[in-house]
Length: 75
Image (cartoon, rainbow, N blue to C red; front, side, top):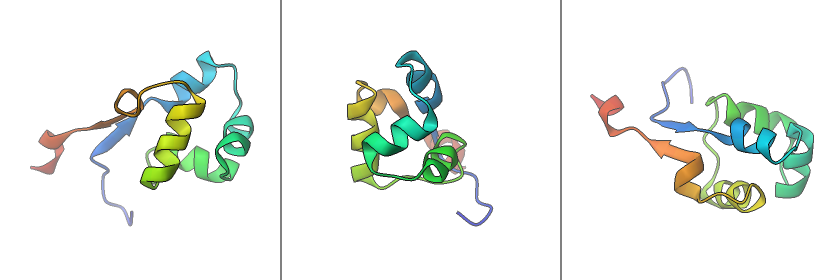
């Protein structure tokens, strides 16, 4: 993302903790690395649409409940 502020926030960490999963557990279940999960949770990396859907499925959350786009941040 090269220093740009993301216009997307997420609540993956909250949902993951509620499910009792570690970052490594979530990574394994969605087919990603722990480093990817860390970066996504921190907002440093925007996941592909497929990965976002996989995360939502594993965490049993609607995708728009995990990822929120803030259009006001475009200004």
